[in-house]
Figure 1: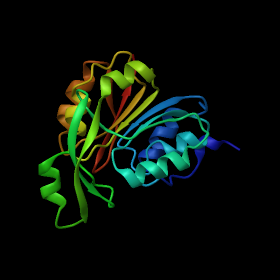
Figure 2: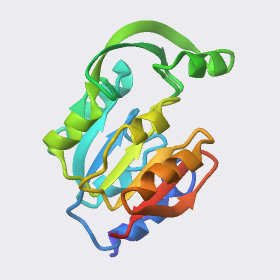
Figure 3: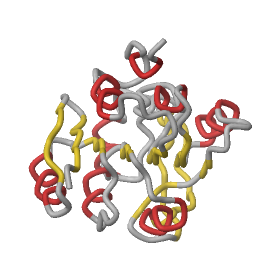
Figure 4: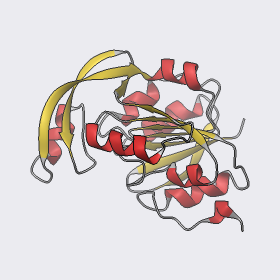
Length: 201
C-alpha cells in the first residue's frame, strides 16, 4: 500500500494532498508545526507523522498541548508548550477551545463574539529561529499562529530552506511570497487561509 496517498483527513482544506504529493515516497522526513493545536484538527503534519515522519510541535494552549503529548507519546517528537515569536520571553495569550487562541489583540477582537475565550494569561514565548537552529533542519514547516503567522514567517532567514512551508497568510499572501522568493520559494498552492511555498533551489 502506498501510505503517502492516504485520503486528506486532517488539514483544513486540501493542503494535505499537496503536502503529501510533494514528499511522495519519503517516510523519514522531519517537520516543524508551529501552532499545532491538538495535532489532528486542521493539522498539516499529522498525515506525515502517520507515514513515519517526526519533528517538533509548538502549542501554547494547555489542553490541546496535553492532547499533543498523548498523541505523540513514545514517537520521538518534541512537544513544546509555548507561543512562538521572533524572540524568547513572555507574552499574553487569549485562550480558546475553538482553535483560535491568539497572542494578538486584534485577532482576539475579531473573533471574541464568535468563539469562547476562557482565559487571558501569560505564557512562555520561544524564539523560533533558535528552535530551528536547535532541532532542524526540517523538510516541512507549518505556521498557523492565529494573527501572527506572516510576521513570524518573515522574521526568519530560511537557510537552510525547508523544501515546503505552509503559512496562514491572513490575506497577506504577497508579503509571504516576497519574503519566500528571497530563499528560492514559489507558490505551490493557495487556499482561503493558507499559502504553500515550495523551494526548488
